[in-house]
Amino acid sequence: LVCGQLGVMFTVGPLVPFFCGSWLGYTLSSISFWRSECSTARGYVRDYPRLLEYVIRTEFPWARMPEDMAIEKWMQGHSLIRLSWCILAGQSCQSLIQEHQEEKRRELLAEPA
Image (tube, rainbow, N blue to C red; front, side, top):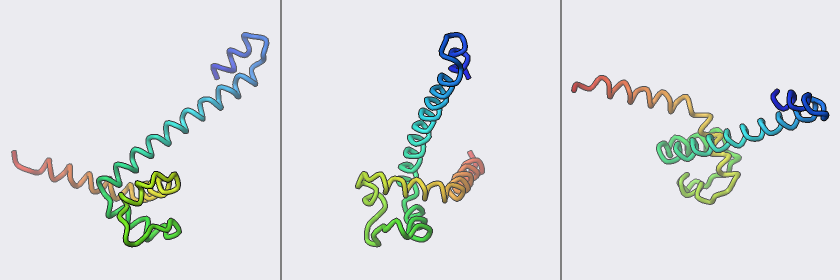
């Protein structure tokens, strides 16, 4: 919106600056979202490896994760495809992880001081 208003103030017109500003905003937000999801997936692999292995093997068999390989080692291949599968698995089991974390919080609060 700001880019469109700047275009009106100059002789360019509002449309091209608006499109450029929209494209820039979308691109920057997509990069930020990708970084956030990568960080979350790496944290889930570190903290809940068995759950993510189970989700990848049962819900996403076409990921072709070898049966004899742990998810930490599988993800160390630094492949964009493997990272994407881990992100998808993390998004798929996010509600289970949140429930588990809530249970931990409740247990901590219920402990006598």
